[in-house]
Image (tube, rainbow, N blue to C red):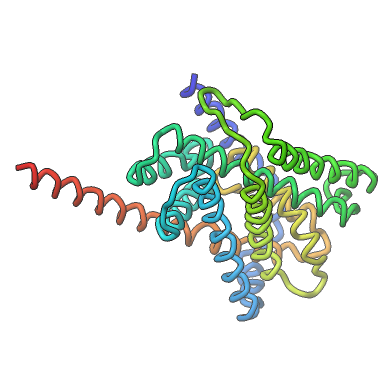
Length: 316
């Protein structure tokens, strides 16, 4: 069943990529690579630096996800190890796609060396996903309430509908906080029993989740030109919508999905400038971390091989 499910999600991802690329081709027929290159050259040095800092902030927040989960489990693992493990996990998962490689393998391989049981690693993985979900709900809820007209960029709906959806998202977050405060019964997911965390842990989740999304959206915002820029809140809202669609589509790296969504929802900007900003985002948030994560994996496996070799030598 698991293999069949993986195959289905892989096919969904491929279909999403093909469809997105087709729609993207229709949008880009009149845009040349020279136009995009010119837009990239127009980005100021300070904007490049701010985009780089935003990338560091996003991956620091992702490492905080794991740190919070480890604290929930009552374990003590160094920040350095957690940061490297989290960085590698998300860099691979963002690029390869959740349907093919969810990051569970990296976490299992790494955290087993620190004495965590498979059951505890399973809880850690679910807890990190929960932190992201809470961050997405909280951030989306605030954006929809503060910027009701944003929903009209996606669909022909009244602004009041946006406020209703935003309040619903915020209510779900409030219910989670209430469950933690009252210490309700644990959640049961198969063989996993996930207890409500303490309020201090919940507070960290509600900071780490939004922080990662705010920093990731800031990469695109800083790379966009100041002229006709709709503002950070609009860029954040569009990013949340496009990122959610990319996750649902299981397209590796949101290939094509991000571009189509941004081009459709930011008509006031030159399409070449939008694509240039997304090139910066993919370079900083996806491709560069992916290349570095491969080096981290090779280094980790080399160290584990040396440990096994030394252990065999001592036994002999």
